[in-house]
Image 1 (cartoon, rainbow, N blue to C red):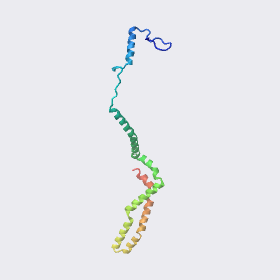
Image 2: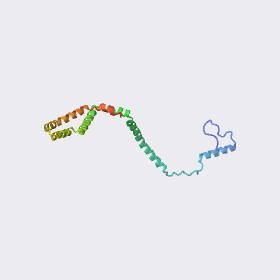
Image 3: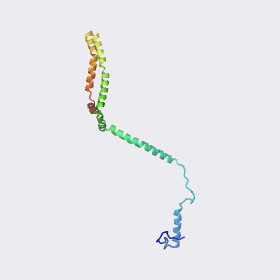
Image 4: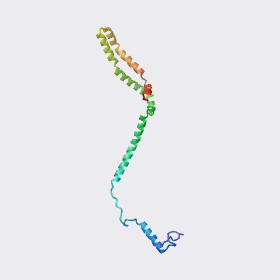
Length: 170
């Protein structure tokens, strides 16, 4: 066995070394080729550890929760910032279909709470009991028209866009 490196035109690797230096070099090469503390032919045993499945589980949980947290932060920023919320919802109130639906719903709720027909009938009955049956009968006969007029007045007076601008910022 020679101490020359293979290849053309290259000088021997151990040129100018003494015999002690050569033996040290050979021993160092052998040590590098064989890992320390293990026999040459012994294979490393793999054993099952609880860390591997736990790490995999935590990675999966992190991947699932990352989009959820991004969505939660976005929603919190949209709802808690009043100016941003009003700016995002403002185009909706300008839509005529939404305005009409909102106006109809508000009118229905207000007229239901007032109950003009019931109040008119109650007033007519009180007038009749007090000795004014003609006025009570007259009030009873116009109670339907009065209820319709109040409903029309309430419906025409509701402006969802104007109400939205004033109430949306509170």
